[in-house]
Structures are given as C-alpha cells and as structure tokens.
Amino acid sequence: TGAGQLKGKTVVITAGPTQERIDPVRYFTNHSSGKMGYAIAEAAYGQGARVVLISGPTHIDPPKGVEIINVVSAKEMFEAAMSYYEKADIVVKSAAVADYRPKDTFEQKRKKQPGKWSIEMERTTDILQTMGDQKVEQILVGFAAESEHVEEYAMKKLHSKNLDLIVANNILQEGAGFKGDTNIITTFTKDGEKKEYPVLAKKEAAQFIISDIISYMERHLR
Ligand code: PMT
Image (spheres, rainbow, N blue to C red):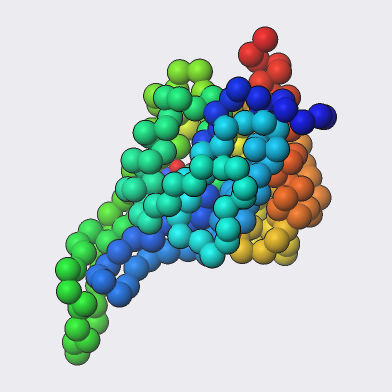
C-alpha cells in the first residue's frame, strides 16, 4: 500500500493513561506509556491524514506533524475527544482510560492518620460508548485490553459500543500490552474480518491497524 491513502481525512487518536486525582500529591493511574497510540498517530500521519492526538500524561515525544492535545483525567479526555468527534472521519481509542475515579477529592494533602483509609470510587463516562451511541458516519475503532477470553470480550465490545473495528491485545501475554515496544494484536471488524498478527514492534502493529482500517473503509465507503 502506498502513502497518502488518508489524504483529506481527519483522524482523532487517544493515547496514554489518565490520572484520577485524590489530593494534590496522589492519584490513580495505569501502566499505559502512550507508545501504541503515538505509533498509530504516526502511521495515520504517514498516510496523509490530519491527525489530532489526545494524550494522557506520557514521557514520550509526540510524532512530527500531529496536533497534540494534552489531558490528565478521564473527564478531560472525554471533553477533548467529544469536541473533535463531529469533525472526525476516523477515531482510534487506544488510550487506557480509567474506569473509576475517587468519588471525593481533597484540596489539601490528606494527612496520615491512624487506622485504615477507604476511598470510594465512582464510574467515569465511557468515551467510546458515548461515541458509538452518537455515531453518524465516523469510522470508530476501539481497543480491548483483556487478560482472558480475549476474542469473546473483544467481540462483545465491538457490538455493544457500535464500533467498526476493534484491536484486541492480551495484556498478560509476553511481548504484548502495556509499556513495552512490542504488541500482539488481533483485529476484528464489524463485517466479520479477523486478522491475527504475531509479535510486532508497536510501530509495525500501528501500520497494520491503519491498513486494516483503510481496507474496511474501501469496502464500506465506496
Ligand atoms: O500505551 P502503551 O503502553 O503502548 O499500551 C498500549 C495499551 C495496552 C494501552 C493499548 O494497546 C490498549 O489496549 N488500549 C486500550 C486500553 C483499555 O482501556 O482497554 P479496555 O478494554 O479497558 O477499554 C475498551 C475501550 O474503551 C478502549 O478503546 C478504551 O479507550 C475505551 N474506553 C474505556 C473506558 C472509558 N471510560 N472510556 C473509553 O473510551
């Protein structure tokens, strides 16, 4: 496949973790480094797209040419992602968004006290679900980070969140998932295509994800 296949398209990508504040010094987060999402942003830009990369806190540099929007919490990621949704042709949600956040946050550092401390957690809004529910013509691509029953759970997310394509990774597999430079992915499309890939550099996996999205669009948007 040549370059420039996404010319004229706007691709919105979310990447990295979110941080959910407890007090000025403490937060909940996860192991996402942003590498997978940044690699997808680079691959989409390489195909000529306008790329908006909405990123949680990471330690890596955004790829050249992409518009970067930095966010911290799931709520901020929701607001940023929704503000670009209408203009997007393709959305890829590779971020590891927190499913829960502390119900109460503290303005001051919470002092050590004798005994236990329980933190009550509340659900965050599911960004992908909201996008699926409001979908007009966008191509919606989600990720599924699973530790078991990968295909079953990924297919469930594909259908219940009204996605066009889902990228599944088993986060317990050696060489897959969070932090490292490689991933082991399987892509499933709404029209029944399944592609299983071997362990690949995240940059290579990103190229395959973009080309699977392009093939899907060629089948559907003629
Ligand atoms: O960043 P890296 O270190 O390179 O790691 C890559 C990765 C493991 C984070 C990535 O490959 C991956 O699997 N990303 C999705 C992580 C995740 O949160 O998966 P999930 O199965 O919990 O969520 C399913 C989908 O819903 C995801 O597309 C997620 O972005 C989305 N979601 C989840 C919760 C929420 N509140 N809003 C969402 O949009």
